[in-house]
Image 1 (spheres, rainbow, N blue to C red):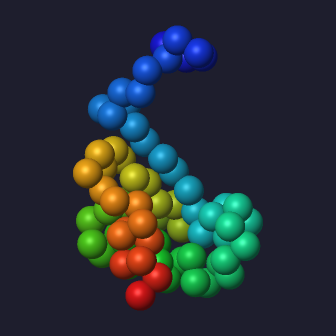
Image 2 (image 1 turned 135 degrees about the vertical axis):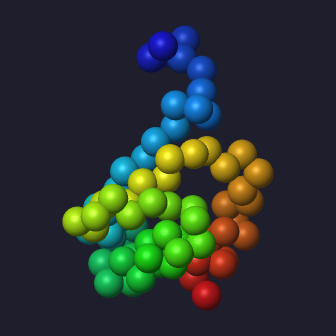
Image 3 (image 1 turned 90 degrees about the horizontal axis):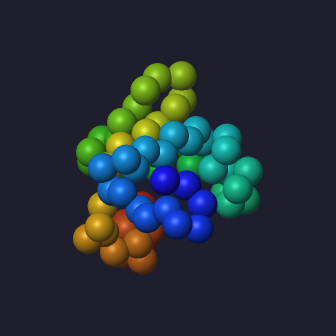
Length: 74
C-alpha cells in the first residue's frame, strides 16, 4: 500500500544506490563514498551488485544510525 495509509514493511525494504548518487546527495567526495560502500559491503551491510551499485536488502531495526555513521567514518 502506498500513500498516507502505507505502513513500513521491513521485508519489502530494498535500497539501491551508487557512490555518485550518495556523493551528490551529501556533498561527500565520490571516492570517499566509494571506499565506505566497499567497507560496508565487506562487513555484510550491503551487497555489491556490480557496476558500482550497492544494495541494502534488509532493514536493520536495531542499527543505531549515529553509531553506524561513526563506525563508517573511521
